[in-house]
Image (cartoon, rainbow, N blue to C red; front, side, top):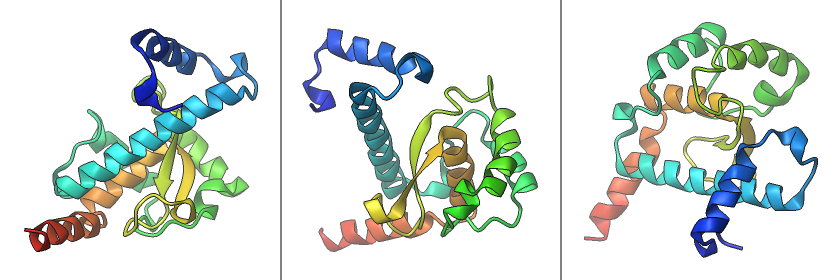
Length: 166
């Protein structure tokens, strides 16, 4: 079932279902499918955005400055161009990420909502290059990638391809 195939009533019901706490569902395959569709759409929109607009000039949230500052204070040495999954998923990493993420509760909407994150910022979303992360982790890493010039590779490549096709 594609999201575009949903009627207005079904889309509203899906949006409501996605807003309920996870404990309300257990492992409901319909909710997992809706989450996967929403995460995939978010990833596609974001990738199109960094392909079309110079990422150095993007603002992803109203609190980008705060997110970036706190991220680099907590994770100053974290390499963001190519992520090591252990830096997000190991037990020591989770212990370090938890307080960082929780400080954005009530500040960033759906801060702990699941989203997809590219491991290597030079590539697109693919099974080999994608990891599951929280929304605030996505924002922190992508804001850093944008500000530090790592996502410019995608933008420059896209602009070159557009120029070649003219």
